[in-house]
Length: 254
Image (cartoon, rainbow, N blue to C red; front, top):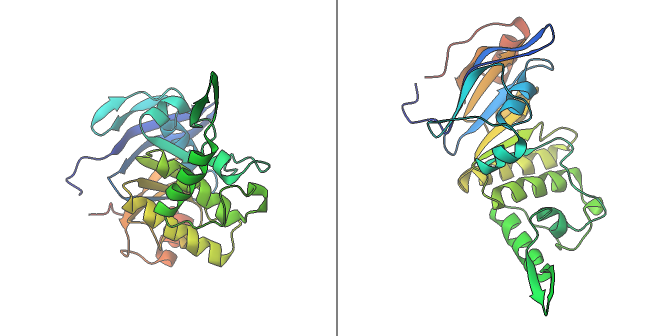
């Protein structure tokens, strides 16, 4: 068992929607500069667990600790204040705006010209390209519209933005969905770079082959329960998929 203090510790998390028990006492931990795969079929409880961590839902029962301190996360804004950033499948990017404008959306730097306060576009362009480069992302120009970019480039911008603004815990919801094989490899490289820059990453997916190349540890959920967890390389992707398909419990990674 890992002796270090967990960056995130979710303990006995339970959530019910009407008669449906979405989570049935799930424990989940993330350590510093670790990539954790959260793996399971649709309806396993992955999204519910992460929405609790990111402040969208409140648990019916259970506790959350950030760096050993018990916290209540009542909104996505409170989650961000704790260093938790979520990159959703829809990415929340505005197609008819530039890369730099999307990168700083809601956090735009300004400067004064006389009595007027205006956007500091030069700083936005410069810092955008620098921030993206830190996680291995190279774009032609910060002024090009997001609508001209590929799905992988858009995903990369969302990851780079989160890391630039100091995400300690970066949650990626199905980051490889609908991407080409080449773009998938590129995004996996960006995830590794984000870890090198100091972020811990929670990689949510239903595809075991997406997460195995990059995860330090994989946590399996099924029907609102934790089946167990494995360290990278302890089981093959096929063996992990078999555990999920059979609802088979596995021993916790040592």
